[in-house]
Length: 116
Image 1 (cartoon, helix red, strand yellow):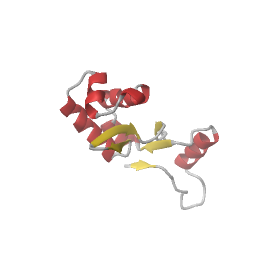
Image 2 (cartoon, one colour):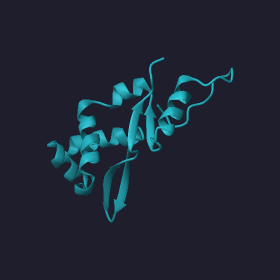
Image 3 (spheres, one colour):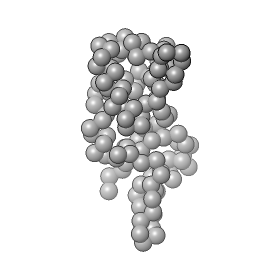
């Protein structure tokens, strides 16, 4: 589960997620996605982080899942499965060009909710 717009607590005081979100936006981080800690533990494996880094660093060179697999030195099938998980969790989007679906990062920044 992830959050993009945290809510205020019942008592009307701002909870930590709201304060953290506001601080990020005030600091110029408008395009971000906040993952819950448990989700981050499950989703952000080393291999998936490598995919995220490769999409960030080589965006203009990647025009297919095969290109991404080549950049990270992994099997296309394994990359496809990891991209599915990143997509299901809102971290990746696909740009449709002809018959191809080109993987792209859905947000400029990915953050994990702060400790309570």
